[in-house]
Image (cartoon, rainbow, N blue to C red):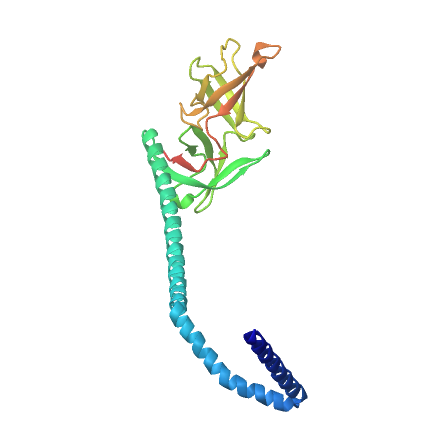
Length: 271
């Protein structure tokens, strides 16, 4: 019981001291209070810095920041290496495309080894309803002349319409202005194939003999007549037979073997 009374008196004394200090601080001038704060800051701040430094040392925070800088450097190095690898990948893709083009040239040359040919690739195309021409990357300086035959792996493309020093324009067989003398591979029926306005890879055949027996699926090739194309160049296949009122009015729809929308490499027959 005595201890309880003693603790109560001690608590009262401490409370009184705190109240006195608060009264003194409240009545102090602002400048004096500011000076006191400066003095306390000068004394306390170095101690705080020292404690923080020791705390960082103990908790290995310095090592963390050092590791962070190292990670940043490694990240930048990886970014640089990744950029180099992307550049090398693009270069490999270009080499791969060039190699594929060379393979196509080689396959074409072997397929048409009976002819003297020159390889070329398409650099521009005008495959519209009114004009179906392409431009290739060889011309007069390469020995290319007008009316030379142009072929692809799938079959006949067309002929050289005009030339410049280093380019040539090709009128394709699907151009509505072109006319190709053709023959069916099986029945040997003659006809004339022309391009159509409404189809990008379709030809229409007419002037078919009355006693012809052409059916869908028959293969069509050049007849060699007319002096423009060599004989036996594959053109396409019959997809539709339309008989008119008279047998002579029969017409055929032929799907070109060459996909002109995706045509990239060609050969020019130079002899």
